[in-house]
Length: 126
Image (cartoon, rainbow, N blue to C red; front, top):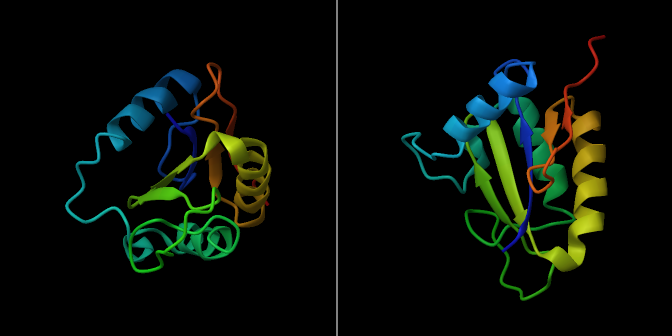
C-alpha cells in the first residue's frame, strides 16, 4: 500500500466534490492510449510540475527513471490531465508538503487521494 496524491489540470476537472470524485474515478481507469510513465503526454503546466517534483521524488519508471532503492523514488502515473503519484509511507509528510507546494507554484490542482475526505485544491484565479 502506498501514500497517494494527485495533481491535475484545473481546467479539465469539475469544481464540485461529487463530480470531481466521479471524474477522478474515470481518470484512474488508466484508459488513455499511451504509456503512463512519460510526461510528454501531459499539459505544459503538469510537465513543469513534474520536472520540478522529480528533483525531490524521482520516478521509478519512464524516461527519467532512477536506479535506486531510496524511499523517495516514486511511482508517478502520467495522464493527459492528471499525474498520480504513489509514495512510500515513510515519506508521506514530505511528499504531501512538496507536492502541494509545487501544485500551487505551477498553478495545477491538488488532490489528497489517501485521505478519506481528501483535500481538493484548485489554483486561485489571477
